[in-house]
Image (cartoon, rainbow, N blue to C red; front, top):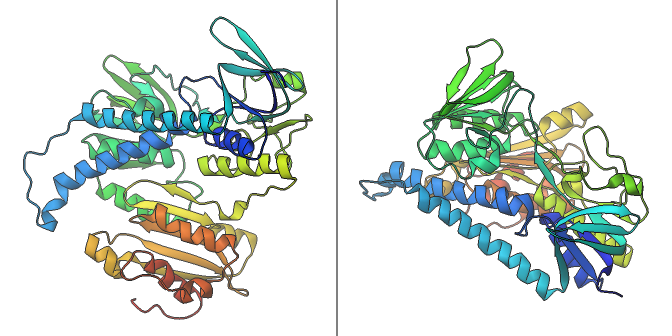
Length: 464
């Protein structure tokens, strides 16, 4: 093969793209990965999942030092925020991880092309760089270009006073008043960060609830907890506009006076990055939402062209994209690849964390599926008491006839880690009784899942 001809070209080096590229190379394919940004890792690593979690951790430690350590017998005084250091640490975490992906590419012999990639015809990808365009060819091309922040009519982004999550990761000072448009995962996580650091945070949400799509009961508990933390919610609020004005911003809401604040975070979801890919040159037309249609093996309507992650249907989750990337290239190399969409978890990294896998009660009721429920509060957990994290609960839903676990929903400390056991159990089609009879170390938070499973089997929890 020539230097610019490969078995597979991956467009996009986010979680789906770089994982797919590495896996394909490990399976013996010659692989090129095209990425327009200087740093690898995509939105998730550069300006999404990783930096936001770094800020969530730092802000949680600041708030705990200020408000909670005295209950543990730790006396502190004069606690001050060094925002510059906090932001610098976040950047260092990101830089270390992006360099790590670059090393993984070299280790696995993935050829990287820096520049904007687009199709010029079947099996042909042009990489536009500063002064030159490089032509690549391959039998197969995988689109993994991710997503971007969704716009909202009337909201004028200026990249400063009115911005998206990208700007909210690097405010140069703590806003006096931050207005968040959208009560989804991104809005609540970043709203929590700046609230902990001292900002007044007002969340405007068009719906009558927060965290749409998640378990209604847990979302309700979460709202009460966030309100105790000082976050204000205005549900049923239709935002018709937002704009910078002077050193602040104004938000227009139907039925109320304009809301004046220091900064605005627009967080109403994300849309696929499918513009500018030259899809028309290979006969692909995205749907009305900008998504690319694929079959069960991620093949598009164009021969040799595949797509994964945020550019296709399904939840926009980094780990979902990773699983799809691996399944796609495994099918290309071995003839088999599969993703179990029923056991893909989702996590909100607020305090407390909120995590889910499988179906919610609302979905089961809508589908007419009879189910059993077990619920165990962290208030009754010895480990939760010891660490001072008693808010929340574990809810387990199982089929009323077969006892197979259909969904698990957790709000509480380390919920994002605890949900992994539930995801594995569901992937292996475990019953509630299977989890209830499995030994769990004591004292651990994971015991709450065991006790919820006991209750779902029709039994009685030991500690509640």
